[in-house]
Image (cartoon, protein in one colour):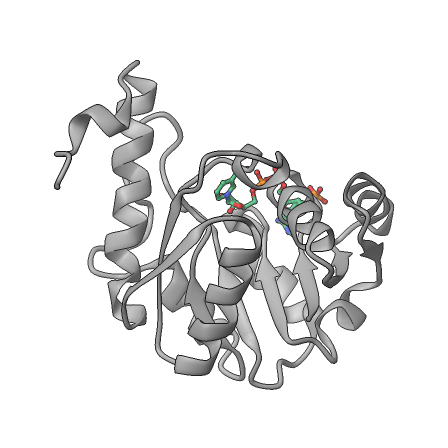
Length: 202
Ligand SMILES: NC(=O)c1ccc[n+]([C@@H]2O[C@H](COP(=O)([O-])OP(=O)(O)OC[C@H]3O[C@@H](n4cnc5c(N)ncnc54)[C@H](OP(=O)(O)O)[C@@H]3O)[C@@H](O)[C@H]2O)c1
């Protein structure tokens, strides 16, 4: 696949590394071309100016800080119906409380800002090291979205990282998935293993 990554930080480089490793054509761009070049060098992807990162792609990953979402989507140019994978967290650092208004998700906000893309919530829960390091224990990536084809494309990209995709529903389930990240963050910052706070279901 041709994959565009918006954002040049830790998560962008980690998923680029995983997808380059599995043979995809990955382009990275952000508000700084110099930082895109650094992320590209670290991952084996290509750095490109922003509108070119989105154009002519099979999927786009939105890997920016929540404060940069609106600006980068505006600079990224029009989408053409491809999946826009949203791994962003709008969570109070160290506390885990969601910063989105009650009942709303950051993924729904992204969908409003990019109406010509098919937003899929995915990859927001695990740290970037999960994707950058080969041979990690397989994890399940819970995801949601409204478009079946976009979900299937994202599921395929999840499998390419070595993880197992699990579609939990439409995009209106994104709030729940984002709350899980807040729950995990709250426990982790309290010094607890979040896995010890959920039942092992046979
Ligand atoms: N890292 C993880 O383990 C992880 C895991 C799950 C989800 N996430 C989510 O993934 C997203 C990226 O995380 P990260 O760890 O990769 O962050 P990061 O390393 O700090 O990189 C942040 C990226 O966002 C850009 N950015 C920040 N403010 C911006 C603005 N106002 N306008 C445009 N671009 C802006 C940065 O651009 P500059 O370099 O130009 O500042 C950079 O490309 C976040 O939403 C985070 O919640 C991260």
